[in-house]
Length: 78
Image 1 (cartoon, helix red, strand yellow):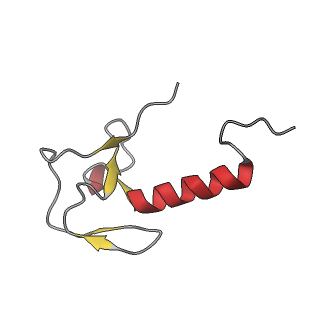
Image 2 (cartoon, one colour):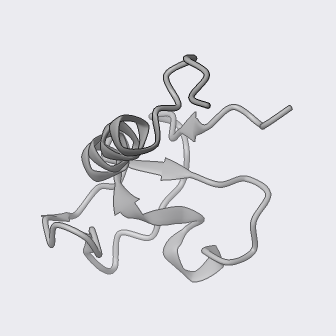
Image 3 (cartoon, one colour):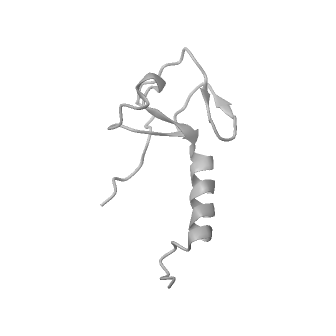
């Protein structure tokens, strides 16, 4: 079973010495909370305060696109 994605809480710490940029759309935020998913378990994003490098909007857009492309909305394609 996949782990549930965690969005940063307002109480989470983040490094405010740099901007957080989405690597897909290029949008920039000073505060990543509410804009990026946070990974508690992966060490891949440690220097980015554990925030993923793709914003929530892009993740949702990509998921919807893949869902349409591959028909993964619960229907069985044979």
